[in-house]
Length: 221
Image 1 (cartoon, rainbow, N blue to C red):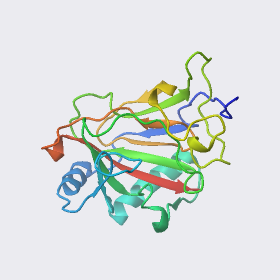
Image 2: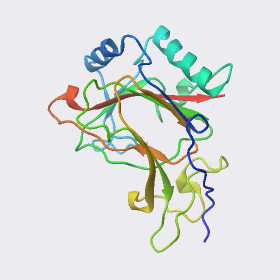
Image 3: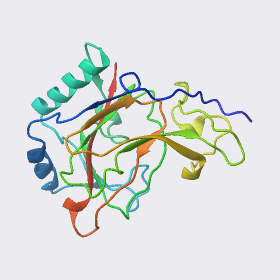
Image 4: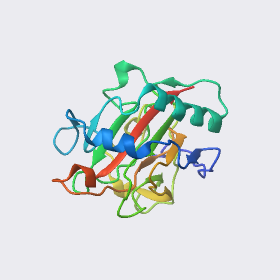
């Protein structure tokens, strides 16, 4: 069965946007997030589609306003509608997410079309051990077949709904076509219908501050 995924080469300024040194107090934000005392656990501790642990309200209203100003300027739009509180249990707009090297792997996916048109991540670890732990974009590449598409039609909420794809995605079904490296205080925004994932994770279980740290955002336009 043919898989209904089109392919478009991700283009900087069209499909994804990068802004470095986006917040003047990024280190303060990172320290504030690490000091959080209440976390929600994802996989591998609970059967969640996201790995590691997370907490809401990562940025203050003023900090969030600076992020949204930057994204609106990059997208060329006048307004952004953040993910609704009812949906935040699924993805978590303005949540800090922390994940260690043994707690998660790359999991190519798309974000729900009903919840967002664009997503973004703000990298907050001040000294990552490698830059190869940012965000990667992928295309489908099934064994024995030619490389396939990378954009999910908005009639589907997830890749598992696309005819011809299994309910459980195997990461080996995809090949990486682009990686945006992890750089402290870098904001990456992208169209949420593109297949993407955190490239990899890092850090040790016993030391929270050693782990990959990012704030995630989801908007409709």
